[in-house]
Length: 284
Ligand code: NAD
Image 1 (cartoon, rainbow, N blue to C red):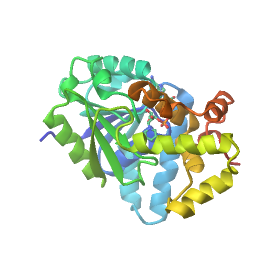
Image 2 (image 1 turned 60 degrees about the vertical axis):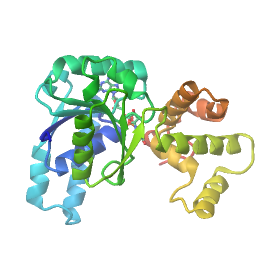
Image 3 (image 1 turned 90 degrees about the horizontal axis):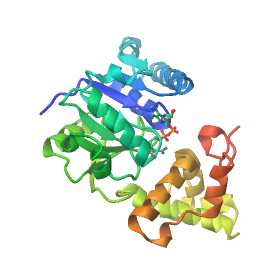
Image 4 (image 1 turned 180 degrees about the vertical axis):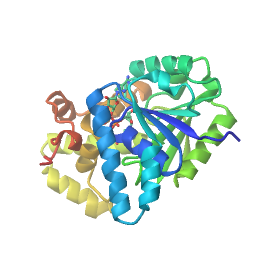
């Protein structure tokens, strides 16, 4: 079994910064790359704040916290990934952009490196086809926020090798996660089921069935979910939800996945959820 010592994370947004933190806390050297300098600085601040919080709560000793921070490197140059053992990609949910990135990663990383995508819905088989190493391409789908949520959904593309699957699974388990395995169909397991519920909650709001608060309270107390679907959509990011629904709609070819016009309007208006301070709810 291959030993993973160094990981490259692409995309320093909500997911990438959490994945980088998780990997560093678990003893890996991490290169975190973002194409936007502001996003990279935000990721650095976010991780540093989180690690200092872990230290202040005695979840991490000062020495271990310092070591963790010392294992993290921030960059805007893909060339810095030349020696990583695995890349975990967490950029925008766009097939074209991801394919372009994977083609570049294929040219830069060492031949043995695994290229994993944190995509919520996009075909791993098609992303893999943009590279010359489809057996080493896999979906490694963390939940939000990655340091807290217990699940990793691993997605096997048509050509993903058993070795790639085993190494990726072992890595997720090293992070303390429970692994589920999905075949490569749009939305995989979790979003195939979650996104239609979120979309239906938007339709309920759009058609005036109830207020946002009552829709969320109904699902929280009525079905024992820790948060309602509209609040959860704000946490995920309304742009991310819309992208996933479009992938489900196109990939599964059923109108039941057509995104609600209200969700589309919020995204058009820049109401992207908690990360922007405004989505279905506002976050002062
Ligand atoms: P985000 O918008 O918070 O962050 C994306 C980051 O990627 C941004 O900082 C952006 O600057 C950077 N980026 C975009 N294109 C890039 C490129 N070509 N090269 C380098 N950096 C680039 O998005 P997010 O919520 O972190 O989602 C990222 C991925 O994770 C998506 O594929 C999404 O579907 C998936 N995901 C999201 C969630 C969630 O709850 N938000 C959960 C699981 C998986």
